[in-house]
Image (cartoon, rainbow, N blue to C red):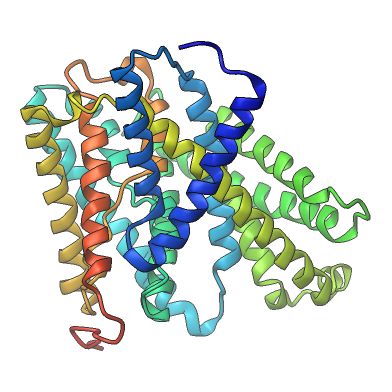
Length: 400
């Protein structure tokens, strides 16, 4: 394929953005997640490239970098959406317990499947099971338009907690040592450090966002968030907590009751900054998500994704995800299980953590097609749940 001119490259990128915007509008009517449509677009581009033997290669680091930025934007956007208060205590408790329970059961079940099917060490299988057990907030949060407010709020909290829980577990199980007193101590110390840093840096970011007179201060904030996230990852700190806490503080500043601190940042100023930051975060998240899923779809070898072994292992993983979710929603939460039970999509965070698995912990016989198969099938199951869901039919009533 001849080298693309700069003009043609700009036109192609612009067309992709326009197409993604059209997908976002369509998803509200056909109830198919826009990221799934983007994924199919990337796959179609790959099939077209293979058919005409075009030599198009995208660096893996590019997809990984887009994933990191997209993850920050998604977590920040979730934080800016979450309103706290006494009336939210039960919701937060239920969504946090749901995220932890479903994650633990899913990870254990998937690790057992990989261990016995691939005959690989159990410790390595757990590392692979963790990314596959994390609900994708990048797919869930933009797909909640047709749900009731109560269901929407629960799933936003659960998806956010699932991201944080999964990343904390991944950082722990990829450490040099686990299941020792020192490992446990280091793990909880890192969480404490991350919380303290999040409070300090949140104040700094508040000063920049509310006191700066420069019109470009929001991208300065994004740059600082990127530095905090990547720096924290290099130090093996759960740096997403910093991003989440900043978003929560920005959204819930009215709850701060310390007079001296509250006086520094008037509520009106913070609210104005919050609205602008929320808008820019949503726009940036949309842009990054667009190119990430296009590139990921393009990187997939569709023939490898539907081999018999891939379908069997991937299908077993989907069954585990579905059972874990149904058990908690039906027998512990005791609320309506539909369509929440269908929300098992895996996406950006799963792909990103797979890129981060150390060489020493990689499975020798793991087929990369399993990852794509699980992402595709889990997203399609969520789509079916959305298509057949009718607002107002709440199913099983709440049991106190």
